[in-house]
Structure formats: C-alpha cells, structure tokens
Amino acid sequence: MQTQPTASHFINGQYVEDTAGEEIPVIYPATGEVIATLHAATPAIIEQALTAARTAQKEWAGWSGTERGRVLRRASEIMRERNHDLSVLETYDTGKPYQETSVADATSGADALEYFGGLAGAITGEHIQLGDDFVYTRREPLGVCVGIGAWNYPTQIACWKGAPALACGNTMVFKPSETTPLCALKVAEILVEAGAPAGVYNVVQGYGAVGAALITDPRVDKVSLTGSVPTGKKVYAAAAEGMRHVTMELGGKSPLVIFDDADLENAVSGAILGNFYSSGQVCSNGTRVFVQKGIKEAFLARLTERLKGVKMGDPQDPEVNFGPMVSERQRDIVEGFIAKGKDEGARLVTGGNRVDRDGFFLEPTVFADVTDDMTIATDEIFGPVMSVLDFETEEEVLTRANATEFGLAAGVFTADLTRAHRMVAGFEAGTCYINTYNDAPVEAPFGGSKLSGVGRENSKAAIEHYSQIKGVYVRMGDMEAPF
Image 1 (cartoon, rainbow, N blue to C red):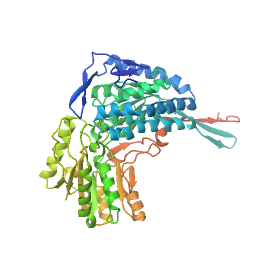
Image 2 (spheres, rainbow, N blue to C red; image 1 turned 90 degrees about the vertical axis):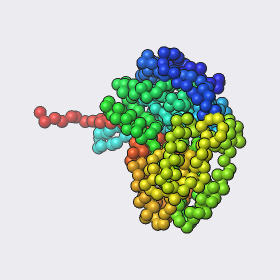
Image 3 (cartoon, rainbow, N blue to C red; image 1 turned 135 degrees about the vertical axis):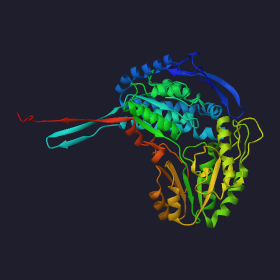
Image 4 (cartoon, rainbow, N blue to C red; image 1 turned 45 degrees about the horizontal axis):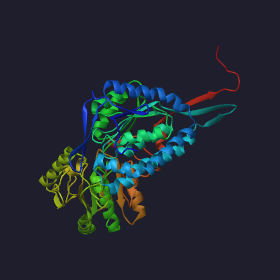
C-alpha cells in the first residue's frame, strides 16, 4: 500500500483525476505546510460517481447478506494489518497524535466493518400469520447513499457510514471534509481489494457545492451527514425536497455532571477525555462540566496537576499526546471563544494561549466560575476549552444540564448508582455515560436528540436507517368483493 492516495477521487474501483476542479490544498496541521493538492469534483466527476454507484447497486443488492458481509470482514482485516500506515496518514490529515490515531481511528473503522460484516447475513424480514393468510416482510436496501464526512474522524466516519450502508445492499458516494480529504480514499481502495465490486463505494472531493450537487441529485436515496448544526439544517432541508432518508449526526454542548461523592481521579479522567482528546475536536464532548460545590476546588486542583502531563510536539512521535487544531481557521475560532470567556468574567484556571511552535497548537484551557449564560457555556467551541460550572442539588443541575438546544451526549460521575440512573433518565440527550465519558463502541447506538441530530449510527439501530421494510400480504383462499 502506498501511504499517500494517488489521485483526488476513487470511482468505480479506481483512482480518478480531473485537474479542472478547484484546488484543495491539504495542510498538515502540525507544521502548516501543504503536503498534497487535490482537486474538487467537477460535474463530470460527480456524474461518473453517481452513475457508478447506481449501476453497481443492483448487483451488490443481489448478493446474499453473508457474501456482502464476507467482503466487509475482509476489509476490516486489511485495515488492521495496515493500521500503522493508516494511522500515519490520519495524523497527516488531521494533526491528531499518532498515539491516538493508532488506537482510535482505523481500528474503529475496522470495528465497524467487522461488526456490520457479521450482521449482514442476519438482516431479514419476518413472517406474520393471520389465520390461513399471512404477511411476510422483506428488508430491502434504500439504493444509493451519500455520506458527507467531518474533519475530526475521517477514517472512522467513512466506515461508520459505509459499513451499515453496504451491509444492507446499498452503494455509497462519500464526500470527505475538504480539510481532511485523504483517509477515505484508502477506505475505498481497501474495500475494492477486499472484493467489493467496482462502484459500490466511491469517494469524491469538494467544497459545499459538491455536497449540494450530491444531496439534491434524484438518483440519491439517502443522505448521512456528520457536521455542524447549521450545516445539518441546510442538508436536511435539501434532502427533504426529494423525500430522501437522512441520518444527521450533528454537534452539541453536552453536560458532564460530577457529584461530590464521585471518585475524583475517574471524574478528572472523564473530564480530560471529554474535553481534550483530539484537541477537543469531538462532537459529543462534555464541555459544560458541572461540579458539585463540595469538590470544586479539589477537582480544579487535580485537573490542573494532571494537565501537566500534556506532551505537545510532532504528532507522529508516539510520545506526543496532544496535537494541534485541524486548521488555522479553527484555531482562530477557538481563540475567539477564549477571549469571550475572559471578557465575560470567567476565571481562567490554566491555558488559553497559542504555543510557540509551528502549526496550529493551542494549550488545553480550563475556565472556572462559568455561568450558564456565558458564550463559552452556550456555544459549541470544538476546541480544547473546558467550562467548569458550580451546582448544589441534583434537581438544579438536571434542569441546567438540559437548558440547551442541543442534545447529543451527557454524562454523570457519582458513587450513587440509583442517582446515576435517575440522571441519565432525565438527561435530554441521545448518548449518555455513567462514570465514564465518550466511549463509542460500534455495538452501541450513537446519535443525538433536539438539534443534535436525527437517526443513529452504529449498533443494530443503524440497519433501520439504511434499509426499508416491504410488507407482502399473501391470501391463501378466495378473494371476496362487493360486486
């Protein structure tokens, strides 16, 4: 396997280039250098991809689920064998440390391919007896699916969308984020190597216009987006014009509630993972950390101590555990939020500065004495900024935790398990955690409520979103009619 993909697009089983498309510079976030230049899909490339997906879909749907699953499982094995190369590429694409990408990115993609590969043969209908008559159902693919990826987990998202889509007999055209365009091409390459027919999984590059062309094409039956809420609203509306199926995995401003009986070390670990993993660029992050007053100062002291373990540097160095922001623009956005936190009266506990080195590095930043109406407590930042808020009672903190238009995730740390279950029952969020944060195994459903999204990724629930039921009534006797 070559570490770098060899062209901008992967269509109908091979790499394809069209240099007439707008240039997409690939910038390594750790240095700011341009490491590759791709080209956005032209109308001809989009046409080629959709034609390939449409043509391949009937053949692919005609395979048995077990046969399709075999391809997905083989692809997962190839991904695991090449985990090192794929992790290096992911680090070049995103800037995330190799220490992280080597255990959380291609491995997670491989998990999805393996899980849905195992499930593919079990995607069945049911039999419903009605006296002598009966109904049977068929679970059928939707057709051509379009996946729109985000820049924080390019390999994982390409697989989280592709694996259930392909398991159900659909084909896919995937558009990665223009910020991280490289990794999905390797996923497509590996699927073909594993035996997927040409055209089953295609990758095209581009900015918003390419995404818009894909999601409004009449040949497209389903759109799955991972992205921001404003983008999600636009994509959902565009998909609705053609009554297309949708999955929307959008952003959040998720609460992480820490009661004073919580194990302090575990609670600090959860807050670190829920705010600073991937340099804070995770949609489900628990960025509103509500700490009960009894342990507030102990929590802040231990957190500050633990943050001394941050090691920045070349993300390809396995010793480095904290990487840059994905882009200069994202760093600037996060710096704007840090300035607002200071201006609005939050107490800066640690961090808040750029790092004096090449690339788009920002220190992990913690604000305390944050109030619910501060900008850093209401808006999604998508960077390494934690807001710590005080609370006194369970009832109060639940009300405040839910006082947001978002509803992606929520977590609670407490030694009182009845309280833990009360809290998660009360959280208005699709993905919840007790005494942990941000675990996302493929066996568990992932997704949000309120403005944070529609539908679920992963688990058996994803099959519902990439297939449809056909009901067939079978009459065994004579048919009556009024005349």
